[in-house]
Amino acid sequence: MSMFRAKKFDLGCFTNIKIIRDHSKRKAFEAAEPERQALRYIIRNTTLPMRTRAMAQLQLTQMHCYTRPTQIRNRCVLGGKGRGVLRAFKMSRYNFRMEALAGNLPGVKKASW
Amino acid sequence: MSVPRARLLQLMEARCKLFETTFNPDGIRAGNKILRQRLKGPALAGYYPRRIWTMQEFQAEFRDLHLLVDDEKELDRFEHVSLLKARGKGAPKKKNSAPDHKKKK
Image (cartoon, rainbow over all chains, first blue to last red; front, top):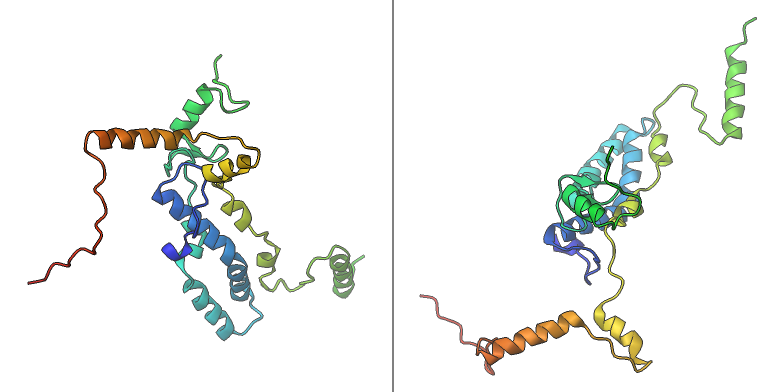
């Protein structure tokens, strides 16, 4: 969805279309988050009339899928891989191994006993 | 010794007022837990490192000091292109007139 994409390229890591897409989704979610939370509040609030809550439900489901937090996936910043990504290092397991063995990750050491 | 419920509720109300929580003795679902949640958008949007500057901007920073910064990637590219041109394999020249559209049959 190109309307969510940044007009000026703004990524400083490895880039492919999947990373750009994920980044756009993150930014779209950030922009829409207050609205989403407001709608979720209305839906969860049992003191409000049923009609209002149903309307809010509809509105929330009809928001663009890019504004949904479940669309976001952590990807490797070095290779763009979507699986086997270590959250603490934002890297896929292979890239993590390579960087760790090269000594680029402070405090990471190969275990040996 | 039993304490009447009304008295306990008063205590609860006072406690809620003191610690700024919502007084909800009946346990009605008012959706307050949504309002209590923190926004996680900024943390999520900051996952990928942003681009800080481009090489052109970096060069422009040093232009005032009369320093030249070599963009090695760009120089490599120029070299590659000149080699291609020397072999006659460069990009074709642009046409002056717009290309004629093919007629559909």
